[in-house]
Length: 94
Image (cartoon, rainbow, N blue to C red; front, top):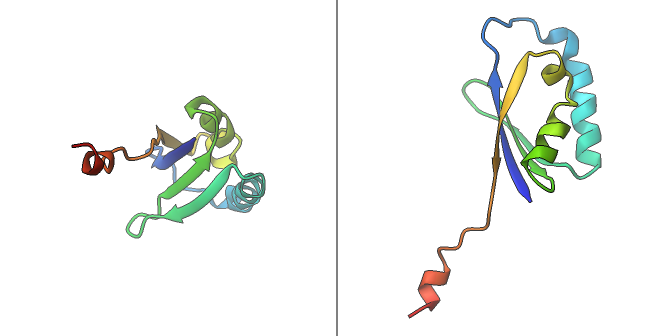
């Protein structure tokens, strides 16, 4: 199942720098395992947007919790399971 995860910064946190290398290493590990499929930043505020491949939202949360910035309580993620768009079927059902 595809999961959309959108970063939500924790208010009042300013210094991520000591954790960024470890964050990148863990993200790379999850990417190599096929869990993180795509990884982006939003243009304006540089919030992370991830596409994950997991069995369900709980598995996605478990994997996101492995990220150092999440472990340290510096960021959180909104986790949104995605389903295929069914709208095209309306074109063929008369």
